[in-house]
Length: 306
Image 1 (tube, rainbow, N blue to C red):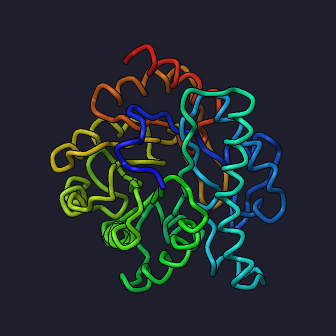
Image 2 (cartoon, rainbow, N blue to C red; image 1 turned 30 degrees about the horizontal axis):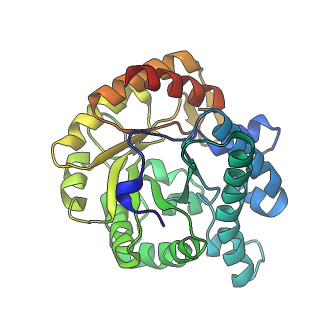
């Protein structure tokens, strides 16, 4: 895994992996979401990663957000098969990076960030946007520890614990990051410009997590762009390290129907990205409904604003 000091600053992330897979024509309305394609169409994941790399992303996030041992085993797979699919997410990202480097010879090799989605992603009930799991820290640890181990063994550059809705889950993840000695960031889902989805203050979370030496960045993802600047300011009260933001497009997701409502264009997202950078974020990208065109526009805008 990469040394924290060697992670580029600033760093442009990719956009929503599922967004690009849906653009390719894949139906992801399934409990495993994009992780379903690890089993059914792994080349589609490679192609999606390549679309973001060609758009300028310096870091791609693996298709393991919704991948877990119990999730795969619930579909009848063995523990070993589940473990192999989790590792495959990193291998596919590496295949995409290798191909991109062969065709483009970039100055810096793009990074591979292994996605550790929240417990709510496994539940597939939208609770990663509420944080109302009703389970204790031990249950969360037992869920996260095995797949973090499998991901690390596949040798990504870093871990990304994302869409975390509550402080309890963030503390469990931070403890595991420390135990594994793995460079990582934690990004939260938030309900407004001050609070996590659970209602806890993001500044309190920053204060609690600040002491972990392997946790090099803290931030926000899959949250409306309208909340990003005040969340950055709130984080800065107790967080002296790097700040990562990769919001969704601002469109509304209806959990009951599985559909998105509203629109957002790449140009407006690019303009917003420059304000996030000026406010204090230095790792910037997109999440749901942010595709390669959004990332390309963001990269162009951020490059000119540096």
